[in-house]
Length: 140
Image (cartoon, rainbow, N blue to C red; front, side):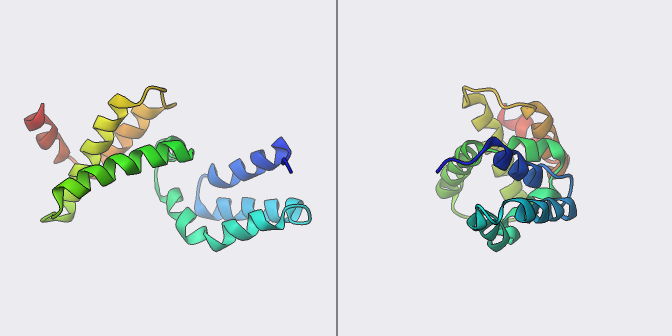
């Protein structure tokens, strides 16, 4: 059975909310409107809320870049590949640097442009601090 577009719009209101509280409120609205017809959807969102809610901690530019599963899968694949080859990390900062570089290199290979990706990449740079510039400069 296919769902109407308004269902998808209501779900987008949840994950595109500005913060966790607003996202939770949008989930409540979704539940009231759609649970009679699609009760499983809100149940899945509620059961997985602890995995969804960290999304709201990121700046809007990063959240927009990770809305779609394809982007998440591509990024995870690149990160797993790098981490698998490295094995051991002396510090948390070294993990951040490796992930930053993996995402930066992966973004060069993506054929379809990601809306606002430069803004998201800029936010990743801000979150990782200033030290990544030294590493990027040495590699380039």
